[in-house]
Length: 160
Image (tube, rainbow, N blue to C red):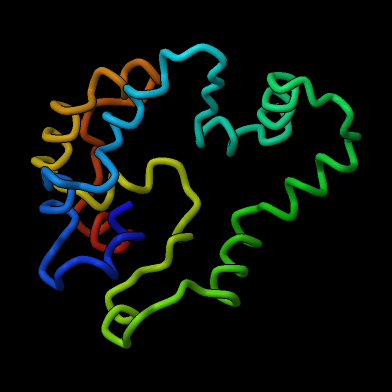
């Protein structure tokens, strides 16, 4: 969300200050999750599960909605068309609208790496502790690791 919002933020807003904003619109991740996770008829599909077995997760989604009319070929085609590489190409081709050159310079691609857990290389141990203090309950509920990953500063710099 930070990368998506960068074009609307002051130049000096880094990811650390962004995650601590009290007036984050529409809300912080954990507030968003709290609003829907315990509602009836909610299917939770984690990005990591989609990466591990996309077809199985698409079938879970279709079964959840009673949409069993799609063939294996149609499902495979939909998965291919919405793959990370295709979505990244679409963003590069169609782009996102910018009001100024400054916004264009300030923005980062929304489709960045497509890898699970890439966010952990972009935050400091203090930022990680802050996030866990605010949303650790939900991270644990969905089996996200709440321990700070053991990465080197070089890895973090390269990923950011």
